[in-house]
Image (tube, rainbow, N blue to C red; front, top):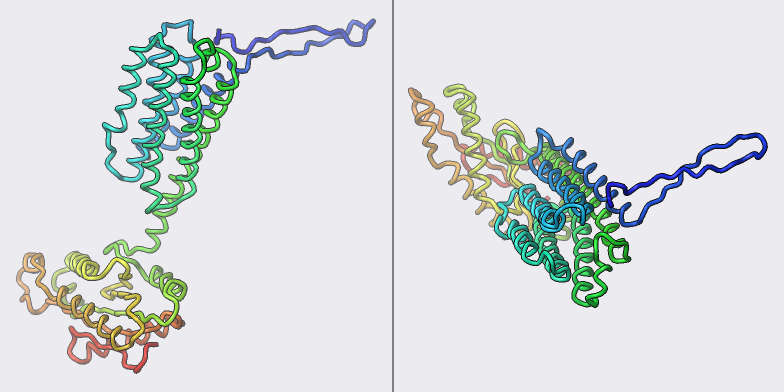
Length: 429
C-alpha cells in the first residue's frame, strides 16, 4: 500500500514523425491520501530536525518539542502501514504516540514559562489513549470518538499553558501557537462529531486508508498546524531572548535594580502614563561613609553591602514604584501618583523616605564578621535623601528634576547626613 505511494510510469510519445526522435515524459500517478501521509511525515521530520538543530546544547524545551515532532512523524508512518503491520502498532501505538506528542508540547510550554508542569493532567491522556484503543481496537466509531475527546482536552490544556504566559509576557509567538491549537481542536471536534453521527456503513469517510473529504481536510489542517506550531515556538524563543536582552540593558548587574537607562525611559513615558495634575516624587539617595567602608573592609564587602541596601530599599517600596541604582552608592526611587494636593503628596513621599531611612539604618550582621578589627562605628553607613516633587504633565526636562533632587540630597549631607531634605520651591517642579 503506502510503500509505493508515488508510482512513476513512462509513456513514450512520438514527436516529429518520420525522423525517429522521441523523448520520455514522466507522469505522476498518486492518490490524494497517500500524498498527504507523505507530506505529514516529511514536514514533521523536517521540523524535528530544525528544532533539534536550534535547541541542541542550549534549550531543553526546544529539544522536547523537537522530539514531539519526531514522534508525530513516526506515528504517521505507523498509520500509513495500516493493514500491512499488526493493528496494535498501526492503531494503538500510532494514536498513543500522537497523544504523547501533545503531552510533550504542553510540558515543554510549562517549562518554557518556568512553571512546574502538572504531570498527571498532562500525561494521563496518553495513558487513556493506550488503554482505550487496546480495548476498542475493533470498534472504529468508538476509537474515533475517544480520540477526538482526548485530543480536544489536550489542546485545551496546551492553550491554558500558553494563556498563563500571555498575562505576563505577551507576544505574537504565543498567539500563533494558540491559533494552531484552535485549528487542531476544530478538526478533532469535527471528526468526533462525524464518528457519532454517520451511519455504520459510512465508516470509510473517517478511515485513514481511504480518500474522503473529512480525511483530506484533517490531514491538510494537520500539516498547517504543524508549521504554525513550529513557527510559534521559535518566535516565542526569539521574543524571550529579546526580552531578556532588554532586561539586561535596563538592569544593574550587581543589585538587579534598574539602571540609569531605565530611569530615563520611565521619565520619558511618565506624562503619557500619569497625565494630568497628578504629583510624583523623585528621591535621590546617597550612602554616607560608603568610601570608608570600602577602604576598611574591601570592595567585596562593599558590594555585598550595596546588594543588601538595594534589597531593603526595594522591600520598602511598592510594585508601581521605580527603584534604580544610578551608579556607585547612589540610588533613585520614583514615586508615582501621590495625588494632586502638594502638601499631601509631600507627606506621602516623606513617609516612604523615612521608612527607607529606618530600614537602611538597621544593623548588618555580616559586617561585624567581614570587617573584624575595625570599630563598627567607623564604617556604619547611613543614607542621605534629597526629594523633589513634580507634576506628571510637566516633568521635562528630566535633567532639571534630577539636578534639584541631587541638590537637596547634598543639602541633607551638609545638615548632618542620614536625613531627608526636600527641594523647597513652594510648588512641584
